[in-house]
Length: 140
Image (cartoon, rainbow, N blue to C red; front, side):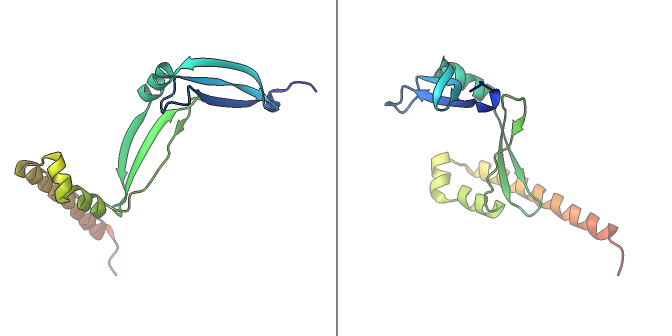
């Protein structure tokens, strides 16, 4: 059988498995489950590279859903955006304002006042946009 790139399967394995943390990662190619080529890299180096290129951001949809987004370049130079939607901004606020959460975060009255001020500014922005939409809609 002639070796072709299409027959090769890339793989990554974690080395040092008995412990919960990898000692190293093995990157390579297999052909019919036999390793053709492989290189072992210390976990510290691989993880530093991954973390240094990772960016976390959060978006809020117009309906109030929270979407965290993790972006990182892959080997082809592309960006991958795995998404998970948290039900709503209401749920996020409910979770944030639980008494046990506030105690653990040692929230002060000043912290909560600042939060309220920011939420009021956000609500004003939404009201302004609704007014703008209403003004630009044709009269019926």
